[in-house]
Amino acid sequence: MCGIVGYIGKPPVVQTLLDCLGRLEYRGYDSAGIAVVNGRGIQVRKRVGKIKELVASIQQHPFEGTSGIAHSRWATHGLPTEANAHPHTDCRGSLAIVHNGIIENYAALKARLQANGHRFRSKTDTEVIAHLVEDYAKRLPVAQAFRRALKELRGSYAVCLIAKQDPQRIYGARAGSPLIVGVGDGEAFLASDVPAVLAKTRRVIYLNEGEVVELSSDGARLTTLSGAVIHRKPSTVSWDIASARKEGYDHFMLKEIFEQPSAVEQTLVNRLDAARGRIAFDRRTRAFLEKLKPNEQFVLIACGTAYHAGLVGEYMLEELARVPVDVDLASEFRYRGPMLTRDTTVIAITQSGETADTLAGVRLAKEQGAKVLSICNVMGASIPRESDAVMYTHAGPEIAVASTKAYTSQLSALYLLTLYLAKARGALSAVRWRSLVRQLSHIPSLVERSLRAEPLIKEIAKSYAGARDFYYLGRRYNYPSALEGALKLKEICPSIHAEGYAAGEMKHGPISLIRRGWPVVFLATDSPVYEKVVSNIEEVRARKGDCIVIASEGDQRIRRYATHLIPVPKTEELFSPIVAAAPLQLLAYHIAKLNRCDIDQPPNLAKSVTVE
Ligand code: F6R
Image (tube, rainbow, N blue to C red; front, side, top):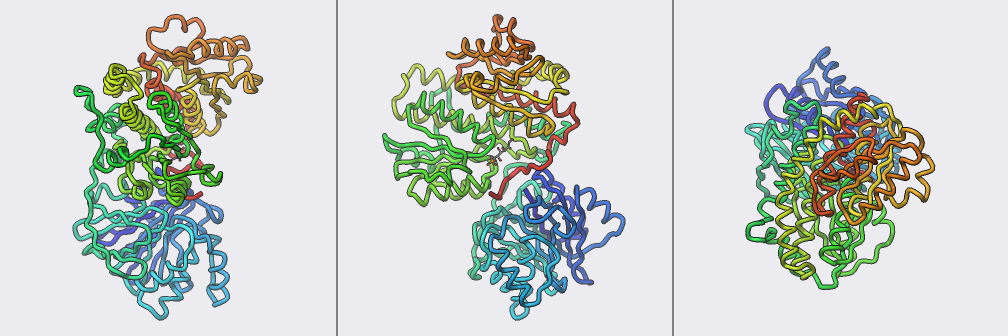
């Protein structure tokens, strides 16, 4: 979802802005633009389409500046046109704005500004900010005018501003949408996400809600909306630039699929001590978990892939820790009037930590007196900051729009939580608990083994690259795997329709569509419902559908039912979703590649969904 960059420091400013903006391409966008301040005032260039169109235009007609802002836009208000692309300027072109988020009261503000003589050039909500600041800047210095304007905005924003009369500064502010400050040597950055600045600096300040920042080449000055100074030192990001590069892989998605053994390891390391049979969390999380009541009710909220991790979590938490669990799509949770109490723990699962619906769910939970534990990958993001406790997954930056390593690291966090609670509640025998802890410690190497199926999956993909419909079926722990497998495929290969179902639901409708050669991906790993899944496979075969079966290594019997067989390491049922994840991801990846899809940035999708 829209990317923001701001830069002040050393020349070439335009090149630095474009480099940083390019590192936010993964967020998804449909137009891009840049504005700089120079001796001639403010210069703006915008293009519809990819950043490379903008770069080409600047190469043809170059310009430079002392500071600047840039933006990749994912259209919300108004079509993806040059007029609607950011940056937006005021009437006189004396200041420029880039913005992420949605200004909910823009229509009222626009009407008022138009009545006062302001001329609007776009259909966006963003443009009102430029005109509002212009109005206040007639009688106030830019910094104050900016803060006054921000106070009038309702909705969400991360916004950056440059002004002709203040060329040695850029301004930024956030409320509801992410914005970070990168602090370099004689230079400073603003960005919607850390990867934008990683090649330049690892020293980062995460802006909090309602904070405003004033950047000069000497550094950053933070204030509240009322102008009170805030002191905060930069923190050092542990990721390095290598983690934000493709490193020889054709796509970030493939790189991230292959990073899963180490991503999962990172989630487990320092928390799981299999030799001594211990699971430990940081002080805050431990204190949080120790205070939970015996009758604690858990509600897992998340969107998309993270929701699928939550569904697996429901099975394991109820079955092994014996705690009552509901799982909700965050977008439904916030509107269904949930009944939460002080004895409810809401677990928010999110890679980015910025998903608007999940964040709204967290706020709703807190309003109703519930506690919030988040499972998140991005340090310092909004959701972990608003939670009572956090389990960071430490999977490293996930650049591809399709979530892969974030999913398996979320599952790993849920395994840790389940086993911790199971022990705390005496829900499992000591022998069984130790055995599961030992098996969990082997998960990174089992995920590694499941990746070895790639050459086989690549071949299978060739048979189905031309298919236009797919079903994915599984039961119990692998029902969410079926949903996730289908989501991966339809996400990155938009010409394919893919649906995931609980295999038991087949007879209640979906089976009617099966015909000769219709590909059905089955999750048929070792489990108490194995026989039932085999029956479902037979039903598909009886209708001449093709069965691509993911089954446990050593399962000879399944061979005779499968059109194609993908073996994965044999595990306890609860760990089967994590070993099945990579084959599902690889199948989607190779089918999409054969269909020449834009795998890392599928059309119409954004990495971080910061609007409702
Ligand atoms: C799917 C995908 C999305 C995200 C969803 C939640 O591959 O990437 O479905 O899982 O938008 O995002 P986070 O986890 O950042 O809250």
